[in-house]
Length: 245
Ligand SMILES: C[S@@+](CC[C@H](N)C(=O)[O-])C[C@H]1O[C@@H](n2cnc3c(N)ncnc32)[C@H](O)[C@@H]1O
Image 1 (tube, protein in one colour):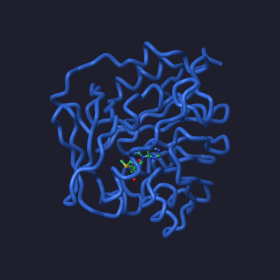
Image 2 (cartoon, helix red, strand yellow):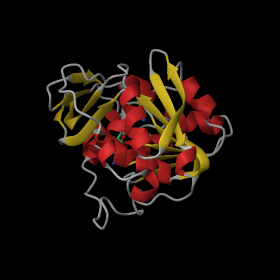
Image 3 (tube, helix red, strand yellow):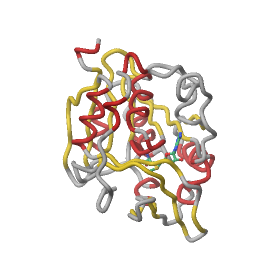
């Protein structure tokens, strides 16, 4: 998802607390507040049942969603993500679960988490372990890798908060694998709606983050980039920085 036409904004991760100081307690949103109800539960559902869909952002930019890829077997650049996963994995916003299925086939324990009933149902049909849950709600276990694939770094519209959440699920030495925008300089935050032939879903807080902006946001909360991939799709792998431990 590119940030073309978006008003450039400074990543606000720099204003947040560090990872170790700012980590949220499980089950809470901002400190002391309960998480808002996951409005995304219906926003993606038609697309998660296979309907062609596009995301329309509050700045007017539109992106065709990769619905076909979500429902297909893992392929092409997915291989880079899969190869980085050497131990147990939790896939946040797993959609129909193609990465969970592929990891399970490789003998890597993997759990998908998705707020959508349609996504959870499709995962179960495919034999992928899944929790139907808001990713900011409690999630059992500590994991070697956390996946934020496709545009999922945008979930919630606050990438620093989402990265803190992801990092809190890691075992010591674990990594967060993030798919970034094709444009390394992309940075945008606002709201978005998923549109299908059935109409528009609810407005969601959303963000778009390129590799350069991710590096800045990650550093501000105590994460460092340890690997990147630039192909048709782009990924960054993050680990808690040595200076933060
Ligand atoms: C772009 S699709 C992800 C596709 C999937 N990661 C893939 O690569 O095939 C975004 C997914 O995130 C889920 N989602 C959005 N907000 C969420 C939240 N707060 N907690 C859990 N899942 C969420 C949606 O239901 C949807 O399945």
